[in-house]
Image (cartoon, rainbow, N blue to C red; front, side, top):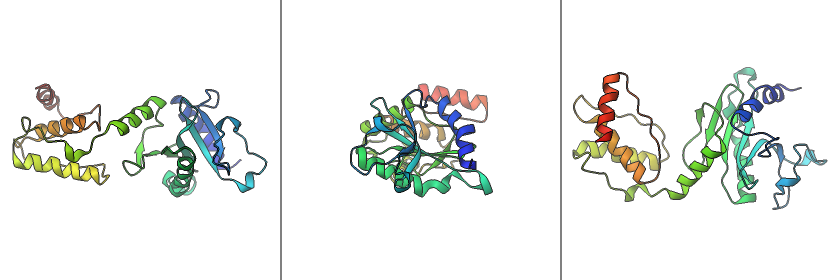
Length: 234
């Protein structure tokens, strides 16, 4: 048995099962082959190689939505020789393209070696490391946000929250970065210049643009958390 197959059986199958994906549940296909015709024929796939396996390409895992259509694809990689799951990026992108051609929908992408898992939504951000595989409800929520999202340049900054030029400039800079599919930002501002209010105004803008629903706000002291909580409520 290859090391990759061991990882799939010993680690990745369990990670998928924890998130609610399994062959038994009917929402997971392993060794998913791509038919030559445009007919996807999901129901005919029996998690086994067809006779002409040498002439076809296979995805390690394909996750299905409630209509039994592919919603995500996962590529497993061996952890031998310190390989990263991202080594399978080009391969899994090809699978995602095939699924999109067959279904007309862009699937979510996951890559994992059992120890590290990466998530990639090609319509939003570059691949990033995550703690595990998303559940179906998580994917449905992201899809809904995709449909409802408004263009960021149409949403005005709420000046009742921030009225200083440098605060608004900071928010516009982040908005421009989001439009360029950047995922991480760092603002450095002196004490008393309104860092918290700037963040609140940014959160307000993203919520009104229907880009986010929930936010995790962290601080390194309880007093700062209390102050921020009061500011958010205000």
